[in-house]
Picture 1: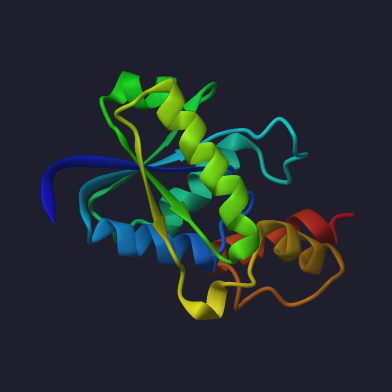
Picture 2: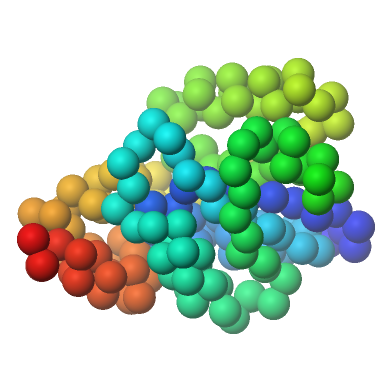
Length: 163
């Protein structure tokens, strides 16, 4: 493990899934410190507020002592400059993720030549998993317990049982 490299795992995490947790946990073994950087995706309608997503992430990662949960807005490349990091962690579930993630990695490097993107493949049991699918299952009253941490499952039930 490098003692100097601060890595950033950015995302909206709406909601946090076990696939995200797999990437966070595995990354925590590779880098001295990981910042899970929660942002708002303006192209999506979020189910959870930023504060809720931060709280759920903190609760779900409380046993990992080299993880910090923070929020940011704006360009990732500028955020990385501010915190003096140059490593971005991204998960690749399937070939369909690759094109988008590849374009993002190249754009970030174009904005800042120091930025390196590390792609991690989640455990095969999570390759089909997406936050969008989890929300849809929860909205329709399905069981999401094997897809998300317990605290997220409970929050999803609270959100969708009220409707």
